[in-house]
Amino acid sequence: MLIKDSPKVAEEWLTPAQAAHLLDVTPAMIRYWANRGQVDCQRTPLGRLIGAESVERLRHLRSAVPEAAAAEVES
Image (cartoon, rainbow, N blue to C red; front, side, top):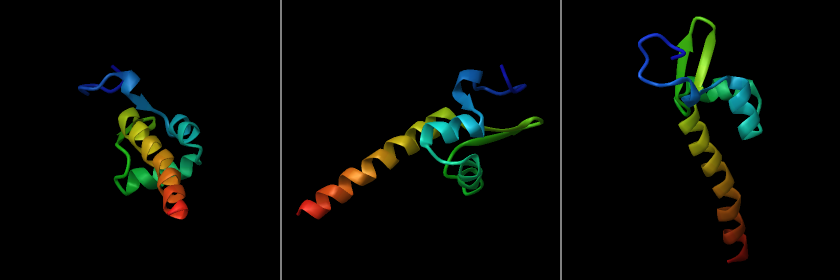
């Protein structure tokens, strides 16, 4: 385990830089979203860890938005 007494395992957490790379945004944007509660975040003595599930959810939502906008333009 990465975090003492945490029910989650290390594979479920990403650094802000890793999450930013997956979402094609800056680490600052990841921290902003974490502060607003839009991605799961856990603070550790070494910094933040971002929940991989919430990153995947955001990734899915961000990829679906252009498709919805394109369908609206075609109508």
